[in-house]
Length: 90
Image 1 (cartoon, one colour):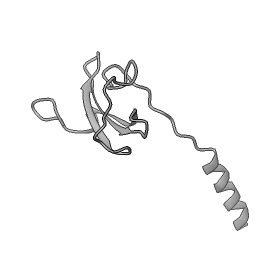
Image 2 (cartoon, one colour):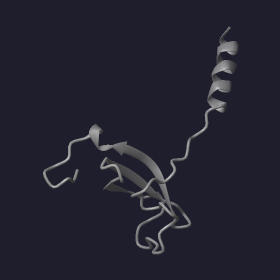
Image 3 (cartoon, helix red, strand yellow):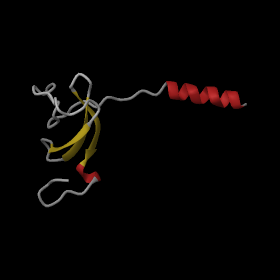
Image 4 (spheres, helix red, strand yellow):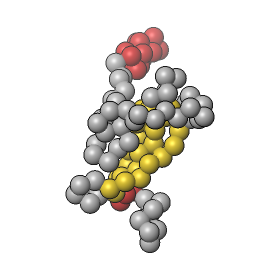
């Protein structure tokens, strides 16, 4: 019985795939990677970018610097999920 549960759990985990976030208008990588490269930041480091879209919604994205110095969006949240200050910043 334990082996059946183990095999079932292994199959479920093996079928998991990660969904890559596509850039939206306002994203740093919308329209392609930026021309300038972040050369002083180590690969694997992260930073956040907050912006508003064409509909006026606020977003916060977290980027990770890849080994080839490109940027990858690793998370995106709507501003309704967090509190903005009077200046519209986090």
